Length: 258
Image 1 (spheres, rainbow, N blue to C red):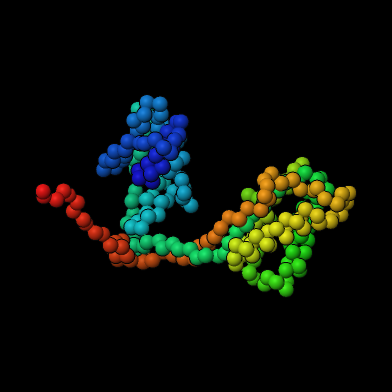
Image 2 (cartoon, rainbow, N blue to C red; image 1 turned 30 degrees about the vertical axis):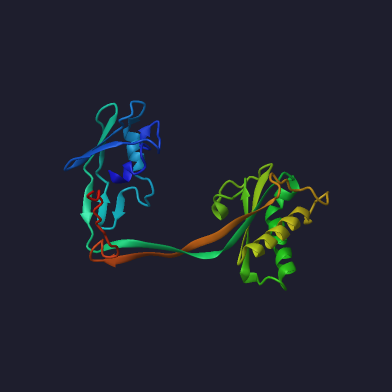
């Protein structure tokens, strides 16, 4: 129940994360109902949101056990309410809590541009690879290779799925995000500027112009994005008590006499 209502009224029609849900729990079931007459909980929406942020459609793993959903039943109880029953909680033999932490990786600068040259798009992977090689060769005596990284995100080809993209047909235009992460912000700015400039003018097979193969929607074209953090700690820690890694302080707040 808590897993569903933590996102507000996303289990309703129409959905909303800024509205609320009224929930009541019984021994073997719970009810979800929208107090807003403009919305109603439906079996489809409630069942769908049960899968939210879950790696398995049948099991929800929590610090102190697992919720088994294989026999869960979803019923349209009233026009506004849904009843969920027959879920089973299986206590864990070993309680665990998740520890997460990040570390500073560097500083980012991006440049957003678009290509509408059919010949460039046809050769886009080689164009980007050659551009990166030119930049690295230019900077080899001033910026160590391990102090910066260059990424290209090709929106319109495979920016979302990457190498596993199955739609291989080339589009008529592609959005390119030059994404540079470096040891310092100044370093990221420099590498991004050099990458953008070389990508704008780099030669490729069949090219008929000397420039103008990229369009930039913003000016200035390079956008410093600040510090970048990556996951550094992502572990399950075995504990005897779920509260042993935290403290609870009870503070009495009240008016002073007089």
